[in-house]
Length: 382
Image (tube, rainbow, N blue to C red; front, side, top):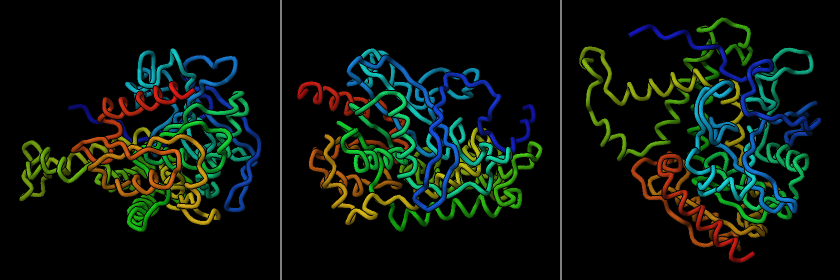
């Protein structure tokens, strides 16, 4: 087997690279909830379909932690991987681009064209470790400006899962007059102590890597960046993305190939985690992982709104809440809390899966049916 090339110091998309299907919106300065300020904000985004004359058919799709704007489409120039939700968005798909105008931004703080730690600061150097602390509300504030630029007065649907679901709920709370319906999938309204603990260990894995260099590693050669820490963070996270049932059934205590664990070799599940850690380090950026994980740690829809239930009670959008029954990251109980408190929500719709949190990606048929039914219900009410 040929030796793999060294891991890049960062796999962030940088200015001058092929944009692929990305479009870019320059949104001006942004004051941040933490008290900081970004002097210039840019969001990269992709669109599919056409906006109706009355602007009534716009759908906003919000990605999870390591996703990006490339929701659907082939891999190719500018896009090293195919779309992450291919069967959900497109002609004839549950979110049918023959009917809906779909917008998917790369989140503020991301590494695929939007302003983030890998972007150049005003001094011409990457922000790196100087990048300010962001909150979910800051990210939605930037997306609100994008909606203004695109001429979208109100979204027919704002949909997202996991970290993307945090922004879905924040949209509903921050701008109720701009959201007709929301779909919050495998997510929560407020991160728990258990989740914060898991996110903290992932941050520690990255920041303890000597090659992290306090976040200033963009000018180092390939192989000299913080890929060990980023890979370890991904391994820690991946255990929460999958269920114990799946890992035990799929791998159990099977050795990896000819390796003998009693002689220092690995079990297959160890090789699996190593693979996912290496894979992410070749397509993502360590500082971005840190920045976005911190937004999840501070996520609290009820902050300065009288608590979570009070904030959810003010949501005026029609709501679809989906949980994965085996999810041990964002638990079904957290989805039940959201659905119980939003006036326009029905009961939680469940995805039955042995895969855990990643079921929102793997069980596309089940998720797709729930979303398609929800959109049809909205059309009948219109």
